[in-house]
Image (cartoon, rainbow, N blue to C red):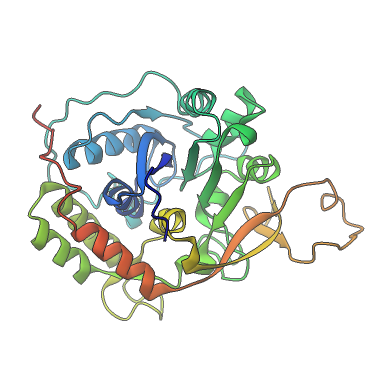
Amino acid sequence: MTTTATPTRVIYDTDPGVDDAIAMYFALAHPAIDVVGITTTFGNVSVEQAAANALYLAALAGYPHIPVTKGVAAPLAKHAEPPPAFIHGADGLGNLPSRQATRNQLDTRSSAQFIVDMARANPGNITLVAVGPLGNVSLALQLEPQLPMLLREVVIMGGTVLEPGNVSPVAEANIWNDPLAADHVFAAGFKLTMVGLDVTHKVVTELALFDAIARHQQHPATDTLRHAVAFYADFYSGLHDTIQNKGCFAHDLLAFVYVVAPELFGVDSGVIRVAVDGHANGQTMMNRRAHSNYPQAGWADGRLPTQVCMRVDAQACLALFESTLMDSAWLQPDSTHR
């Protein structure tokens, strides 16, 4: 596990989303992570709702000072799919019965511009954790072609190599939502790690754990998280054989677990291409034979390999999540009324 004295400075690119909220609170709670900005995108909800949710979740936990930006509202090329309200709720947080008023405001920069500004101001010191469609990252690359050299690394939650997809037999939702942006990002030359369904479908967070966290913390933030997860877990009930008790795959959480504890993952390396249309739209195809000379165009263009998480210590991930969220030190008095 990463135990450096200086926490990893992270920009969190997100479309909250229940599993995004789980991941956000883990990142805020873990002492080895310093969230220096939250950039939002369409995906689980509209970008307007994503930005509102990010502001609300940050303020509720007592972090209104973290800059939040609004980013891309639609894919680069394909038509936008409707947000999956049946999975995350119409509001992305399990249809909260009410919300406290917040006073924190959006940073006026676009998400892409914020990423570029932070990378230029802190060369080599920012890790970008992207857990939604990758339009903000693609747009940031257009603004600053040297971005792969300016960021420390990029960790994405998205894609799948061997595990069946969750929006088609071969595609994962984040990549499928904006496949052209994803292919652009995979080709850019980042130090890039993909945390996809090959590992996230092996780690089940049970609702009972969020019940226990809410009881222990007695805080509006963890109460809100518990409510959201209950809705999300209802969607997953009976959907996967691996979910025996009421719970869910906390997909986005594992991107942050990788940042602080990469030793919990088994990683393979290979060039990734993304199918941008047709029945395989959004498929992440991995060349697992590094020295192959294929006649098919597109596999010999000098792309750098991506580190792809293929194996995971599920129990260790769950133990890390539980111990981190149970720590009372991370929660501040909520700032919704300040």
